[in-house]
Length: 205
Image 1 (tube, rainbow, N blue to C red):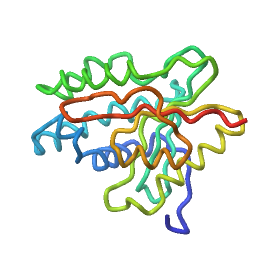
Image 2 (cartoon, rainbow, N blue to C red):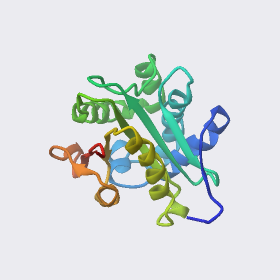
Image 3 (tube, one colour):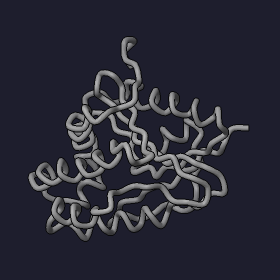
Image 4 (tube, rainbow, N blue to C red):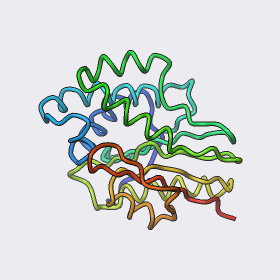
């Protein structure tokens, strides 16, 4: 990570840049190929899809916390969650907006949401769900994702709060393992040949 980069909380002014970042960060890969096999279609659909996620995460009426590096090349979306509850991941009109955004690929997005929802834990303590950790493809392997993790983990450790996530690739699974996350249950299948990995970072004593 560049020496001058810092981490800050995102605001509504960052919505457009965040949507573009998430689109670019997740545009390629097995999961993306499964969700929207046609790259030209994906390039049209993903901005609409990610704008739904970003708008909800930045809504002041939700509990989500979006953190970004000040160079705009990486971001994390966390969902603080109360004991015994599930995270608030989508707006009330999500189904309608998702259908409008994804068109003929709706069923695949619905299937992904379902299998990920099934993997979410019910914990008997407050916890934090890392919904998305995104780094722009041109800025990967430079420490930005690790810096975002370490920054937020300091907060979690101060309150003895566990963290949970679902790694979308084997590479990201290895990154999260280096930061204290352990496999939590069996891998989930999000499509033919696409495995995702639920992981839990236990609360620090």
